[in-house]
Length: 252
Image (cartoon, rainbow, N blue to C red):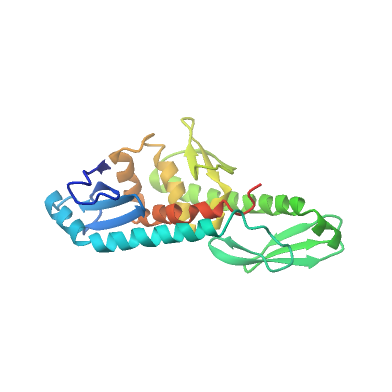
């Protein structure tokens, strides 16, 4: 990607980044964040024509930026990590679907969590509700197992398709990264990706696997990502817009 001079384009509020694409059949504008816009230019289209198209979309771009800022303000106003109430009214976005956390009284020695298609079911004695930190650890560990299951699936499928090898995956709780790829080939992924839409999880996997070919973020790297996932910008944008709120859950 090559950043353009935003002043030349009369976009002084945000940076415009150009990406030449061999897969795109039309010019595309992607609003990544309130300060970053990507202009996707097909190889057969001149930069002059692409810049004119971008100017024609200025009102739309500013509207999208305003929407992002409003959403960010609402998220900030909502406050810090929502506390789980453990009374049957909680919901978590498992694979981006609001999933009920059901609390089922049971005569068991220790609380047990079962992840079902339509709900997270916690079986526990009533006394266990007095130690929510232990219940949160149980829930976090269960979600990590789900994330490992999804990560193993996506990495096996996508590594074969891309033609690379890897080590792992290692499931962690990175605060600033969704994933990373070490020179050794070990790929680490945030367990919180299991809270995102499956295609967003898949994008992060493809992103990290492409680092097995290019250990950088050059045009060649992004070209490889696009080759294997032409709509990756949409999923990258989802993380920019919604990723921060995923750290509200079980943040301890």
